[in-house]
Image (cartoon, rainbow, N blue to C red):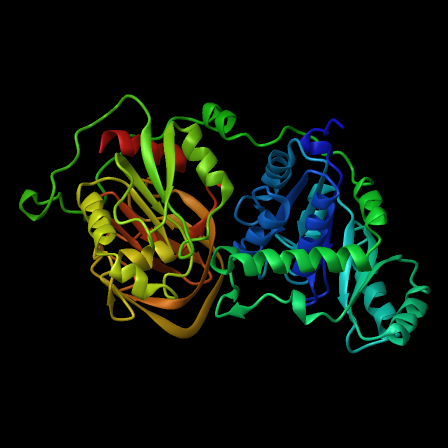
Length: 483
């Protein structure tokens, strides 16, 4: 069959009344079950979460993509969806938190309900029925009636204890007028282990993750009316406008300002290390992107934007590779769990030295969260790259939430004054929290400066989505050529 354009792909949103109801199990299992039927499935996740898309990718064989109306703005949700769904037969979108939970203090913004409306997509509500029977009808009725613009097309009852329990639940649901599209029994075997920041990523679990996804697929295939779910997805409305394309976006955006030295950054001392690399204004720039089990957090659009800007993107694994890829002109180190792999990262002295030399040369280095920790002098007492004169350690305090930020210092990513939205998600602290030239000034939730801009290095706890400000990628690649 010929797949429709991304904007017309059948789609549905898997949501729930609250976190922990089983959204990931149902969404991932449905993706895998549909893929097993020979369909090209486009996987998506509402919000900034990096971990669930890894399971989605394993289920479908396609990149998991995020749809975040806060970081990217509501106007980009449809185009980013259409880009990811291009060439697919159907799309499954996993929600975040409860259906109507959005950015704090921002009403419906960035909630699953908001994204469902932007996508003109029907919603399947996954309800944890483990401690209720007739009350399930009142719960579903409340969610259906809360916002008439959100179309809840069916319910999947999760964690059902027995045939008797199922009969009671179905009898109650008859009064609501919302079809029951699936009933899933309690099944610990499909559980995915969690730790301090949520689920354990796919990259760390190997064959265990494959088995977990297979179990989710079997549970959904056995307990849900997959044909009815496909039919519901086909009822989604057609989206207007073209899909997002990295090359077209960069071609239509103004050129970036010329790179300038960062505020407060001293020039490299020739006696302290390698001299700055010669300029190479022509030809592609090689950008090394950290991957592997320790650095699993990244948005697919970042790599697409770097490539569209003329970079040759090469992925390396800081746990295994003893030096950066040959010819590296720029380095991107995203999020992940370096605290879990601190011993292995510290033991890889060759790569730590290679990273430090690249940073000292003035080459652009973009580090977010886990990347920030890796560039510090130490992490939990173990030596790291020593690019930043700062120390990182684990903490009992969870830092989590959206941020409205403005660039404080000119850097390889942005000129001072550039406003971006992002999010923080970590249980670590860095001392000091900011350098002489901070990376960001946080406008929300409290006014503070954060992060480091030194030579070509931009290091911060803040995760950002470059699709919202594509000039970031072009400026970074331009800096690769001129630093």
